[in-house]
Length: 262
Image 1: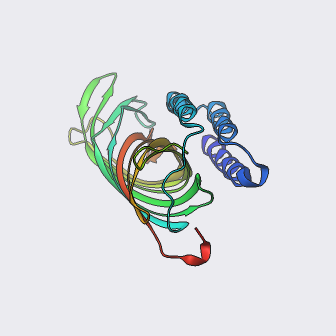
Image 2: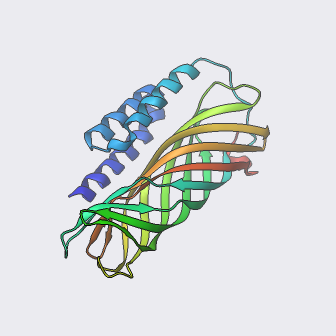
Image 3: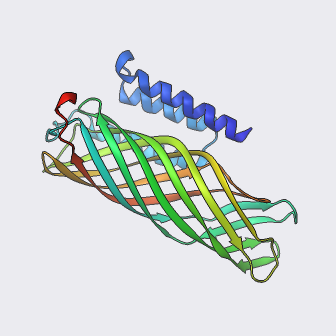
């Protein structure tokens, strides 16, 4: 039931984003729609981030235009550091539950982007990360464990580049939806909790913001933060929450495609 609600929200948001240009929906109206949907579906960890984004966007309204790009189509590459908070887990055969900890992980991503307007753009992104498991905390105590979760994320990201820029620096905000493919393995040499290996596919989403610096009309470097979450991992008899805070450095390069215009 939880996955169905996530998928329904995903498709609803996709059709909402398509109507931005045709219905002349403002960015603030669109962001309000996202907030309303996230609150309705109970995605609790992103509420503070959304409030921060709304505040920052209000500061950037009405300023000057950024340095023009040379093409509407571009390639982007990203290198990220993923940090994880404690995630809830439950195991059905023993009935135990508690928190599971992940070690920090490096992510790599590539994307093709299309600028819809001077401010709005879409990116189709593929990213990869592999996070080692560290320990579990449950009623009987704390237990060191092994294993890892390797994840591929396939996201369609909507970006808003603000009208404000200073010395070629330009803030931007982003939200994305898509799906994630996970390969998970849980190892416990002590034998106190069951071992497990399984694959799972589920809904994925992200939200964040950052800063872009344009080196020249063809190339820009970016730094940004985003919160990434997916549906719970189903690893044999385990059900595990999965989310992380991602800090990324990236580069955009305009592709010489003239037929799309500038």
